[in-house]
Length: 212
Image (cartoon, rainbow, N blue to C red; front, side):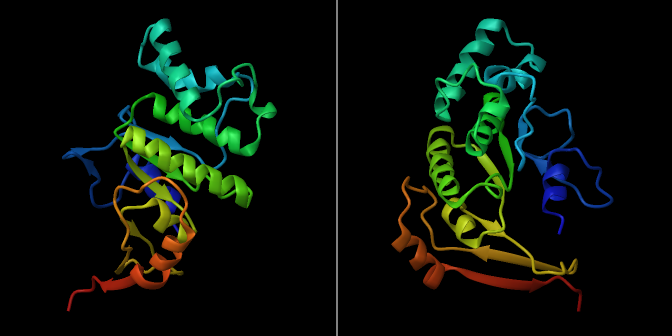
């Protein structure tokens, strides 16, 4: 339905046939280091250990070795992977690989973080743990995140604003999702609150963009 295509367009990896995507008034392109993406299937280098994977994009920024090490240590610790520095990706669980991908993206200090269904391939328990972790990291980093998910509950839990479309996608309609949720996103999973949002605060609205 074009969700990943949208993220790649925001990241400047796809050329647009029409319209324009801007960040702070500037058009996007693939050379902008302030945009980072977390992939659904990790995207780690199998021949590199954890710190090398996290540091990969930092070398492009021409940071010193000391600066790279400090940044890598900071984000390995932030995502809860301290003690696994000597591990290759095949030695990490699915949830740990996703944490590593998140650390690599955060390490470049992006203004916008694009996250493409990062928990879709994980078991339910790991998914809930990482949802909590992402909320905690957002509280620390306060970065703009564009998060793709198939789960309405996950969108309400993690999002300040959301949007979606029905199948098949109608190019002449916009779909908006909104929820009565605190934009500060206090940490912790409160099922009662989430269920209340689902039953009372959530609404989906369709707005036609056809002329006439």
